[in-house]
Length: 324
Image 1: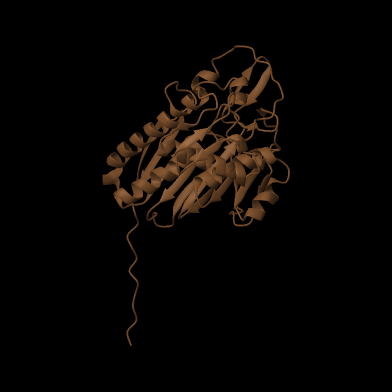
Image 2 (image 1 turned 45 degrees about the vertical axis):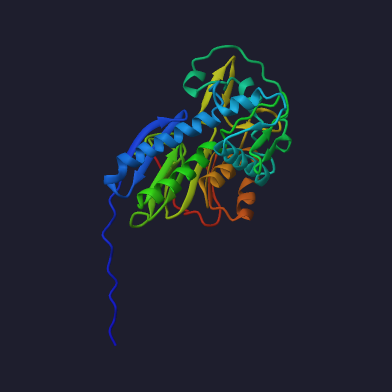
C-alpha cells in the first residue's frame, strides 16, 4: 500500500487597486496580479451602472425618477429592481430597523448631496421627530419589473446598495477572471473565488483609516475569511455639524433622526456583504440587546461600546488589539 503525500499549493500572490466611487472608497484585490487592470475596468463599469440606477444625489438616476412618480407604477431596470429587492428583504429581516423609506429624513438632516459636500454646508436645520413611512408601503413587482412608491415618499438605498454592489461585483469578477477576488466599498466587503492561502485577512477597526496603516488609537482585530461578506457600521465615520447639532448618517426609522446608540461600531460576518451590512446597521438602531439578536441569528459579530468595551458573539475571534 502506498501513502499519498499531498502537495502544498504555492502561496497565492495578490494585487490591489484603490480609488473612489459611489461617494466612498473602493478597494479591489485579486489573487492573479495579471488580471488586476481588466478586473478594475469591469468593476468601474459595474459601479457606474449602480450609480446611474441607485444614486439619491443624481437627478438623472432611476431612483430619482421614482421620487417624481406621484404614486404611479414605474418600470425599472433589472438592476434597480434587484437593489430594491435587497433593501426590502433587509427591512423585513431587521424588523424595519433598516428601512429604505428614510430618504426624506436623510434630506431633513442635511444629507442631501454627496458626503464630500455635506460638511461644507452651513445651512441651519430644524430637527423634527417623524417616523419613516415604512418599507411595506413600497410595491415591487419582480414579474412585471414595476415599482410603485406612494407620493411623498423618497427612497434611500444607502444602507444596502454598496454592500449589494460589492456582492454582485465579486461574483461577476470571480466568474470572469477565474481567480480569488475581494471588493470592499466603504468597508462593506465581499469575497468570491479561491482565496489566498490562509484566507483573506481583513482588519476590523473602530476608526476609519487606510488599510495600509495600523490605527493610531482604538481597538482593532484581524479576521480571516474564506467566503461570504463582512461589514462594519458606525456613527463616527460620516458625521457633520449643523446649527449646533452633531449629526451622522445612521437614521433611526422610528424617529427620522440620527440614531443614539450604545454602540459606536458593529462588525458582522455573514453569507453575503449585504446581509452583514443590514445586520450591522440594524444593530446600531436596535441598541441594547443587539448582541443577543445577532446571537439568535447565528451571526459572528464584534460590537464596540461608546466607552470602548468590546463585545463579541459566538463565532467571532475573541482577540483584539488596543492601539497605543
